Image 1 (cartoon, rainbow, N blue to C red):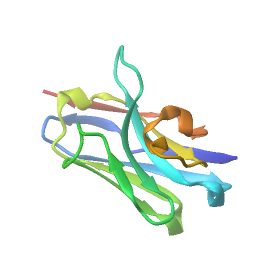
Image 2 (image 1 turned 180 degrees about the horizontal axis):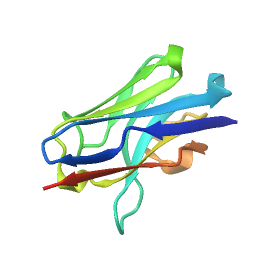
Image 3 (image 1 turned 90 degrees about the vertical axis):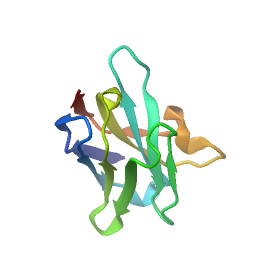
Image 4 (image 1 turned 60 degrees about the horizontal axis):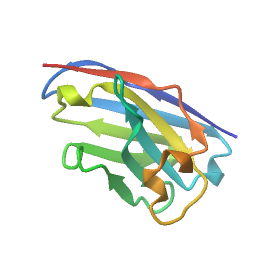
Length: 126
């Protein structure tokens, strides 16, 4: 089992920045990749960014490329999502997730992730 705890959400004005953290515990050696997803009001959960646990390859949704950066600190078993130039449409509950499997394109799919955090609210005001 892997446990995930997110932190760092909040209210920010458009153009501002936030950094989300996701601390992993338990069987972290089994993690292949860590992902960030978000779910806005009335919307389906969508992929935001992901990073391979070993190797550090990163992946981003087109909507956040150039504004968000995903990183990891393996010594702390923590993944971060630095969000800059935030827009009102970034408002959502943000979830981190851990995947133990890999196949082509898997990092983009919610179904690839076995473990999920509780979510943290990000609200961007205009």
